Length: 97
Image 1 (tube, rainbow, N blue to C red):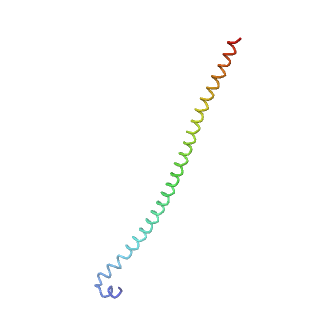
Image 2: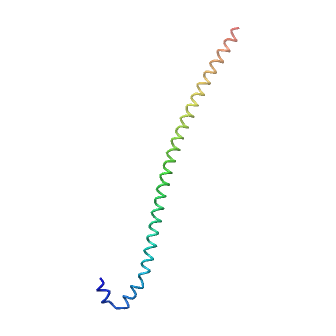
């Protein structure tokens, strides 16, 4: 490779040497952007995990609330039945006297 550069026209060799700093700067910029991209992807993955965790917790809580409200409706209905039964017994007692 070095032989090819030495045999080439001095103008081309000079131009390649002049371009070396540009290549170095581009390499540094590419390295910086690659690191930044990796960091952004890591943060995105962590946020996705948090969103999944939050969604699962919300679904579990919603299911629990649904179960509780269903149980409350059933309890309220059974309480109403008991109250009606007691009121009917009181009415019968009052009618018998």
